[in-house]
Length: 400
Ligand SMILES: Nc1ncnc2c1ncn2[C@@H]1O[C@H](COP(=O)(O)OP(=O)(O)OP(=O)(O)O)[C@@H](O)[C@H]1O
Ligand SMILES: [Mg+2]
Image (cartoon, rainbow, N blue to C red; front, side, top):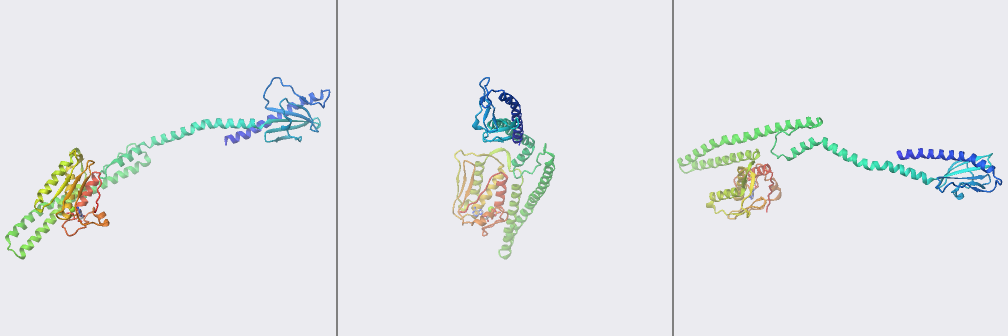
């Protein structure tokens, strides 16, 4: 826009200078021509020194015969008809005027290229600072926006970096007022959520814990009763009651594990060696099921140690549940292979009937079971999943 406006204004100025020049030269030319002895002889104006002429002119009589011309003037460049006022050719801008009762005509010409150069120089002088200013403005804006968003970025990072179990309030210091209210509401919501989850967990843990003693007492009583009643229907019933009580005991144990798995504290501040822990658990399992001819193979990394901040109790619960499953749901008389890789990948493999893809996806949900012929509550994999999520690990099932 600036270049366009300048161009129009410059053209006006150049035009008026052109007209003014023509009118100034005309009287001088008239005097000069009339003072000649032979008016009809054309004459070149001598230049004082060689110079580039921006303006050239031609004085002609009314028949078009040249009477006077500036030293650089090229008659073919000029209009061949004698015009009055402004006109243009492809290369020149002209101004023509008549004098001495329309007997003498002057035409002043100016190269159009001069005007174009002027406009181009003008446009460039606008453009250079812009080339510098535009990136400066952009980067300045970017820095400014980034600077004013720094607390929001810190807020985002603190939300991103927390684990799924962390429901503590997020630091809202320095947040702009526009989102401060939202951030505070989010904190209130987190607090309510934390309290609700806490209440649920402590209720599960407490009730499971409270159930332990009465169940243990009932078990002891029923075992004594079994000895006391004579063989027959009554003893059978007592045996059934015992098995129900054992299921109940297992269930309360699993509920307690689930409460722990879903609570915090799955990571400890110190590092522990997971491999020695794994060996301990596997040896324990081997010993407790020595009579059944169970074979557990282990493939461990060469280094023999794997230090991790995972809470040893949580790791033990995880491994126990997975190992129990492998023993319980695996084909009998087939070895179970427990592996631990250099990268900390735990794998437990057992032979079993293929579990189709659809049920396989659902197994980690609470109380979901695929193989109903074996006893169980369907909580084992839910516990394992809660622990894996809580420690930031991932768990996958493959069958086969
Ligand atoms: N290693 C495995 N091999 C074959 N099937 C398995 C294996 N682990 C789990 N499953 C299947 O997934 C189901 C869910 O397992 P989950 O551990 O959650 O429950 P459960 O073992 O039946 O009962 P719980 O562990 O609570 O006593 C099992 O019923 C079984 O059908
Ligand atoms: Mg299980």
